[in-house]
Every structure is written in C-alpha cells, then in structure tokens.
Image 1 (cartoon, rainbow, N blue to C red):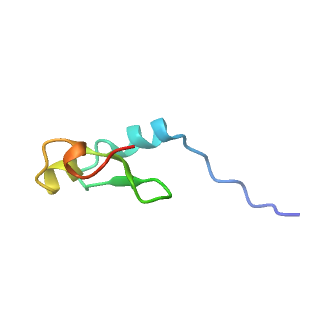
Image 2: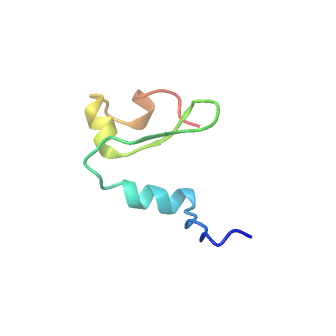
Length: 58
C-alpha cells in the first residue's frame, strides 16, 4: 500500500491562471510539440505581438 498523498491535479485553465502572471516566459506544448498556450512574458521575450507569431497554435 502506498501512503503517499497524490499531488493536486490542475486542469489546463487552472494551470494557465496560475502561470499567466509570472514574469518568466512560459510556453505550453502539446505532445506533438505544437504551441498550445504562452503567457504574456513569453510573447514579449520572443519579440512577438501575439501567440500566433511564435508558431502554429492548436
């Protein structure tokens, strides 16, 4: 029997809300490597105007 507690699970919306305001640039990729989300810091860091400028969004 495993007595370790399971870590909290976050859905994609919750994760985006948590990391959205970070000053570090965060880009989320799907399993195929396509960009599915990026916070404002990542967009600015890459001198882009929008997420679509970073690559194809799914």
